Amino acid sequence: MNMDWGFVDQLNQLQGEALLTPKEADFRQYLVKTGAAEEIVKVLVGMEEAPEKPADASLWMQEHFGSQEMALVSGRPIDKINEVVGENEELKAKFADLEAQFAATMGKIADIVAEKRRPSLEALIRHHPMEPPDEDEPPPPALDLAKMYTQMLMRFPAGSSDGEGSEPAPWSPEAAEEPPVGSATAEALGAWSADAFGMDSEFARKSEPALLDSLLQCADPASATPAEGEEAPPSLEMELALKVHALFWTLVAAVAPVAEAVEAAPAE
Image (cartoon, rainbow, N blue to C red):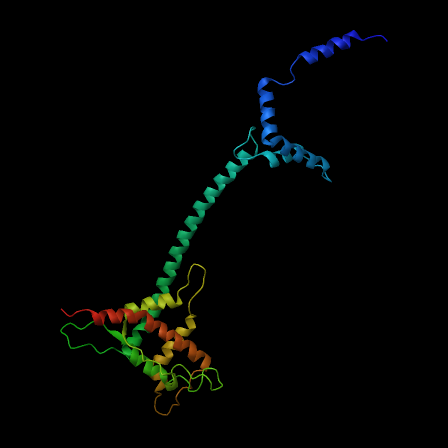
């Protein structure tokens, strides 16, 4: 057999040369020891065994191995991440600005609505004023809650709240409800109205504004004392009466602590 001595010389030369530099060999050993090499092989085998090979193998590898901490080439995911982070910061700033504009707009709307309701709330005080004590400097006009409630009772229906006679209405003598106490100034009424009917950031209200109209009508003496020759207005429907009654007691709850504090304050 004739020996190809040229091939033998090339083989001996290759065997005498190191296939990896010492640094590359150390890194390969590091990958093997830490298990990273095995994970890389799994990913590559998964790509090879996939039913459909990715059209862009380089992009596919970037999606699996690229990260914000490990990016070697410009244009890799690190650049996209930084771009997205920058856009996110801009959007956050725009969102904060829009929130501030929204809050300012809602505040203006609340002021306009409060100004429109102010005459009606002040009329309540004129209809049912709290008698001022004998003082040299009387306090500002205020609504007498007990007087207002007495007027409202004239528009509430008698009977049970469920229509079957088992549950007496909360305003009936059978319910033995304590009468309201305290008073409310125009400022207190305005604050209560804003809290009860104002719209929050989620466009929700505690009570529907239409209930305020029903409350004001029930508290108006003219609604229960018709002019001569006119018929008295009918009682409210039970369902509406229950809602108006509950709304009134939110007013009592809102101003009672203030009234109690005023009563408890020592006289100078």
